[in-house]
Length: 217
Image (cartoon, rainbow, N blue to C red; front, top):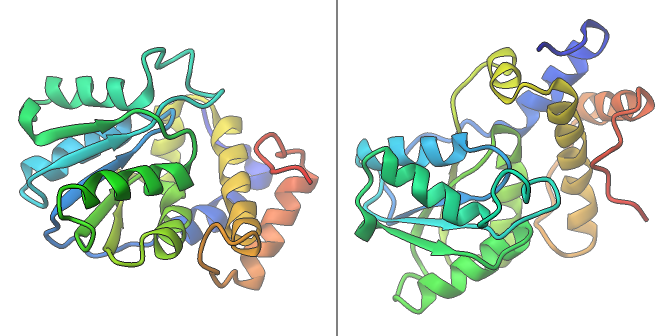
């Protein structure tokens, strides 16, 4: 399972744009954002065991793309996977209502505010290509927190192979790139600079038919 040769350069351009490459720092909490990629839970557990944060929140109900794989909800399945990887149960809290990234941030923020962690240092763990959008969303919706992002550290080819569906990964990359601008315009996230070469790569991928995850007007 590989990215088609004719779009590899454009896919890599988007992949690199969304990878924030934040330096790891010790935080008060690691927040694993739900989705179709169980690797987010794996990475969250790894970072917990490495001592980067003492507590975890997994957040996510279901989206149409995850209900078949995680029928009990994303956060529940992520929690179960982390437990299998040796994370103690008392270190994990789950938020099971969020159905999109904005709600992931809003509902987690409210949950942690109840525990006196509104101004927490937070590490958001997400799919590699979700980092920029997650950070922009947190900047807008959780300004009190100091937020850094992390993801599984894999080359693009390895990540695509792990998911097993190149078209799905490309469609998600294209969709997240559109959302960087669209959600800022709607007030859902903080504006982000989009380099000319990123926008051009995005347009070429749209023209190539990778439109399944676009937000429709």
